[in-house]
Structures are given as C-alpha cells and as structure tokens.
Length: 277
Length: 153
Ligand SMILES: Cc1cc2nc3c(=O)[nH]c(=O)nc-3n(C[C@H](O)[C@H](O)[C@H](O)COP(=O)(O)OP(=O)(O)OC[C@H]3O[C@@H](n4cnc5c(N)ncnc54)[C@H](O)[C@@H]3O)c2cc1C
Ligand code: FES
Ligand code: FES
Image (tube, rainbow over all chains, first blue to last red; front, side):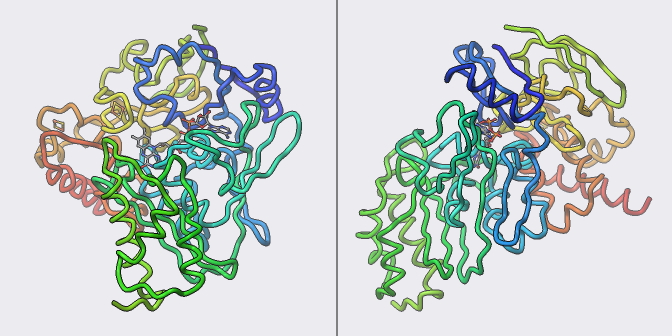
C-alpha cells in the first residue's frame, strides 16, 4: 500500500490528478479500514490522506447557508449548538451513526462518497437540499445531492475530484423528521431510513435502504403537496411502490420494508397533514 | 508496502516509529510499542475493545491507519492510574476482561467531560463498547460511581 501525504488541498488535487484514477482519498477511514487485515486486494492501492488538511475540517455559516467542510465529522456537528437549533436532523442522524467512536472519526463527505444505500448522513442532507461541491485541478463543480447518485454505488464524481464542501440553504422548516429503523439503537445498519422536511420550497421525503441509492420519493412528495386524504398506512403503499424498489437481503425483506415505510410515514405525518382514519 | 516514519505523543511522551503504511494503530501499539493493554475484538469498529484516545476523543484503533496519528496525541489504557479503576472491579463491570480496556477508556473520556451528560445518557455514550459478559448494568453503575467520586473530589 502506498499512502500519499499532501501538505495542502492543492497537493491533494495534484496527487489525485497524477494518479489518473488510481488513487483513493482517505478521511476518517471508518469505511475503508473495516476488517482491514483480510482485505489484501485493497492493500495494493494508493491512498491520498486527507486527515492532515485542517482547512477542510471546520463547518461555517454564511448569511444564507450552512457549509460543512470536506472533513467535517459527525461529532463536529453534534457539538455545534447552532446546528442543533437550525438543522436538528443533522444532529439526530449523526447521533445514530454507529457509536461515539465512529461519530468522532466518520465524515459527512465520506458518507456521501461511500454511497451506501443504507447511509444515515445522506438522507438528512438530501432532505435539506444539500449541494455537493466537488473540486479538481480542472475547477469546481456543484451537484445537488438529490442528483448525485446515478446507480448502486455510482455517482457524479470523477476519481480526481474531492468533496470539499457540502452546502445547505438556511430556511425555516415547519416539519423535520428523521426515523431510522434498525435491529438495535446503536451500531445498526438501517432496514428503513426516512428523512422528511417541509419548507416554503415544498415537501422532501427521502428514503434509505429502499432502493439501490438513497433517493427522494416524488410520488409521495406530490401526494403531500396536494393534500390528498390518507386514511391509513395502506393508502400510501401504491405511491411507495412507484417511488422505491427495496430488496430482500440479510437485514430485512422488501415486503417488510414497504410496510414499515408506510407506517412510519403515516404516523409521523398524520398530525402535520391532518389525516384521519 | 512502503514504510513511513512518524512522530506522535503517546501517553504523554514523544515517540518516533517507522511503520508500514498499511498498519493499524492497534497493531502499532501492541506489536511495535509493546502496549498490549489495548485489545482487538472485532477488527471492524463494532465492539470498542480497541478504544484509545486520539487528541482526547475516543476512537477505535482498529480503524485508524497509524500514519494518521503523526503529530497528534494518543492515550491508551496504560495511561490510567490502576487504583482509579477500583470501582470497576468492585462494581462487577468486568468479568473476562476482554472489553474492559476499551470500556474504561470511553468511561474516562466521559469522566473528563461531564458536560456530555447534558445532552447524552451514559448508555448512549457507551453504546460503542460491547460486553459479552456483564449485561452492562455493572459497567454503567461503575461509571456512575467514578463520576460521583469525581464530583465530590
Ligand atoms: C462500526 C461501524 C458502524 C457504522 N455505522 C454507520 C451508520 O449507522 N450509519 C451510516 O451511515 N454509516 C455508518 N458507518 C459507515 C461510516 O462510518 C460512514 O459512512 C462515514 O461517514 C464514512 O466517513 P469516513 O471519513 O470514515 O470515510 P472513509 O472511510 O475515509 O472513506 C469512505 C469513502 O469516501 C471517500 N472519501 C472520503 N472523503 C472524501 C472526500 N472529501 N472527497 C472525496 N471522496 C472522499 C473515500 O475515498 C471512500 O471511498 C459505520 C461504520 C462502522 C465501522
Ligand atoms: S476491535 Fe476495534 S472495534 Fe472491535
Ligand atoms: S467482561 Fe467479558 S466482554 Fe466484557
């Protein structure tokens, strides 16, 4: 294994460009180092270490945005009182990622690029209309997170690009919910994850573990926008079937996931939407 | 495989070592530096037996590439004062002992940052330290005892 230790963000971009697609950025290593001794294939790769690039770490506020850095960790967000007030779902999701030892090392950018369909950071970012800022020697590019994934573990990021920031617009929200259904409260991978927000810009309903990528649910969002009457969880199943395509796997079944999603949506939104049985 | 020379602060003292670039902090501590207090349970960040402090925060050393600690501060279970751990022995917080070094490292972080209990419960803070023996009540109660001692000290 070769590891390159850049002294600056610019160095890192040059190293990635020079490697011509063969270098992997490494940040908190909570995905990359799992069961490491047995992963001999990965020992042969070249890594560009981001952990020393202190400038990528802090989160910052502008008049109309919260900007997470390319190295901002879950713990950085959990400890930030203002984030707790203005973006409570970021804190709620961060506190459900693994456990403390993972939260202090794991980064939001790593969660995005790892691209697990079951991730917890991505759905809340997406429900807040996050924009991913990518940088390479060829310049900066912005991709809205809800258009970032193109398929299972496929995304609109070239290997020479770093996620240098994640930008979230500051808005008043009337509804903010995050629900993770797993086998236990800590160290669990979601069987079903849902992040829901409502602002002047409209409803956002984001589902995790329900499709090859984390994704928004346009049919459900439309149904909420139109104020369609819903008399119980089952009324939501047709819209769910149009928006997501869960699978049977080691953690759950497709049928269970759809039922749970319908129930979580119904009981979480019943009051806000004035639904009556 | 390439070697990297790094320097960092370990339990308060400066150390310099040549490590393999693919080496985990857990292995550097145990096999290069002879600090075998830190244990490996799962090797995948689930169990917390390998918990050490990196710049004062609890991390799983099985998920830390050693080169990432260059210039930083690492504290292991060997830095703790054995008599201070008495409450764990008395309170049934340890049986086989495999999880204990990790448990006490997370507990010590909580002890040094009691403000954490304003936002988190002890059980949430300890969720990354699995124990197959005690059933957790002994662990949680012993940390409570340690916090109480500190509070009255
Ligand atoms: C025990 C355990 C429990 C976990 N529990 C959860 C959980 O409950 N929910 C959850 O969502 N995740 C969980 N995870 C997964 C993991 O912690 C997260 O995905 C984390 O956010 C990854 O961040 P990192 O900095 O550690 O990434 P790394 O492991 O360093 O990298 C992950 C990927 O991102 C790329 N990358 C990292 N930073 C950048 C960047 N700035 N630009 C471009 N590419 C980059 C890397 O090349 C790699 O492909 C868990 C992991 C473990 C080990
Ligand atoms: S050995 Fe590191 S968390 Fe289990
Ligand atoms: S005492 Fe045996 S695992 Fe905790």
